[in-house]
Image (tube, rainbow, N blue to C red; front, side):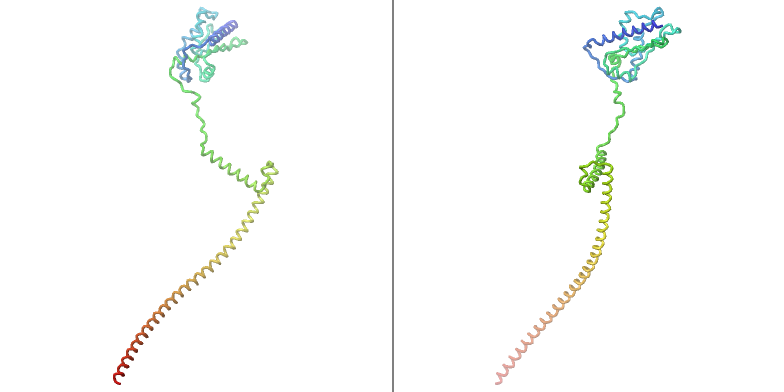
Length: 303
């Protein structure tokens, strides 16, 4: 059993060396388009690969030493490059022939293979201490075969995650306005109360003193507000008294205006009466003069 495990390790090492040599060769002129495949596409591609697996690791009942001929070893790179194979050997007495299981590569193993490039590497996991433990030989799939078997481009799995939506510009501006308003107001108050605020750091004791001074200043401001309110009440009362006096003066003025109108009306009436009297006197004078002239003429005729 240990000999079988060693032989398997040797075969895996030879496959690894051949893959490294093939990767060191210059790439072909015709480059195939590399695309990322999803898990469902990889499963669809890896499903028809039992032929390659049978050609890469072929064991028959007439080969008890589990050896691989050179013709099959020459075809091994092509088969191993077409799909991801996990060949599990159970060297127990109950299983004379090795079991072969074909597993498709997952999305998590496809990402490192794409990042590493087209070069394939074989990893051998063997436990030499326990002969009953299986030996796993893993060969990654090549990207060219995936592209050739499926021409459709698969969506990028990295872009499938939901992106975190950042806050809008208006929300950020509102938050900044609130913070700036608070800090600016506090800074202005502290600068007005304490001129040395900007030159000294704010320690705990200094902060307490500043808040104490701020409270005292606020108390003073409240007292000043009360005094101003009392003065405002007094001025309001004086204003009401002055408004009463103004109203009385206005009423007196209105009364004087009425008397003035009455005097003007009486004066106009007296003036009209005097004019009528003058007109009557003038008429009487003319009449008397006419009589006097007539009497004088009669007297002259008589004498």
